[in-house]
Length: 442
Image 1 (cartoon, rainbow, N blue to C red):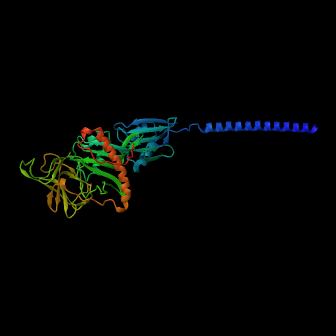
Image 2 (spheres, rainbow, N blue to C red):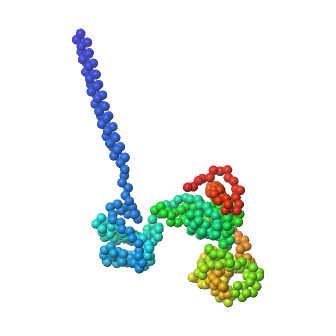
Image 3 (cartoon, rainbow, N blue to C red):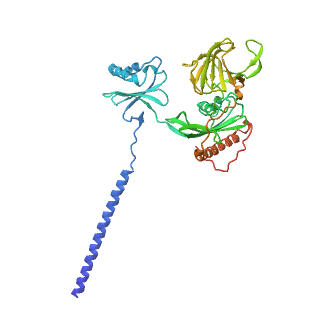
């Protein structure tokens, strides 16, 4: 009997110990979960993100923004904010090798960053939307030329010519600078003075943004330009450490000669064996192309060569002649002046500035008379077939084909969308088809 009682008591004690241990374990577990939850809640608290201007945290600063007024000087602006004359003098001296303070322009913005007690700490002058000069005051004065962060956004843009390329960019909401970029890419293959209504294009490129504001055009990856119902592709590719544009066959768009010696103008008179001279009022050959342009418009050499003549003639006025090789020579007449360093014997590169449009000699107004000779015989500059430079090399062909196919798929998609949106403004619809799914670039 006693043995059974003892066993029962021991059993009760074991059960009680187990119950106490279980309750203790449960309490520890609950405490641990609470601590973990509190820790998690602390970790999930939002992190304070400071506000920066020009790389400077300004949350606890006073920021004063202003605009340079007419005839206002750097020293005058700083004195307005009670900056000591000796500090201003030191900054002016330090700026000599970094920034010419005399070039500060009215209308440009500036920013003064001060401490909470209004002590000036930094002064920023914005040269343009990207570049700025940072002046730092205090015991350690500094001056630095800086740039704002540029964000690149890949885009596809398209347009249809109504009047000229520049106006087309504006009409279709594209940065007008794109007209210059395209004219340079296609300078060897498209006569941009002969664009026709209905010519159209699509281009893949990077738009540059600063503070969500578009500030320029970055890299242009590819383009298609339909000129007079003929398609011209341009695919950017790098080989032998050089970057250029190539067509769908891998041939370089660059030629030995540019299509024209001016970037923007219009043809006022063409090559002719019998033209009524506007001054002499008699019929005589005009073995050149006249480009009407404002006086002072830059004139560029259409190819590499050597200056063989810098002279003034009664009819051609200030004239330049460039010998490109044993076959071709070009002439530039009625110039208002020559570019710096241009003289007989000077070597010039393709696209180099050589002079400026004028009306010297027998001319009714400012224009460039551009001439071309082949083996000493005058030929029509608009009909010159210029040889290409080196095409895509065999070793690079596979890589180029991959890039080209991707770009052309997207260009075709953009071109088709343009035709769908403006069917009545285009002369003809392209018949190129693709079975591949285009990569949509937003």
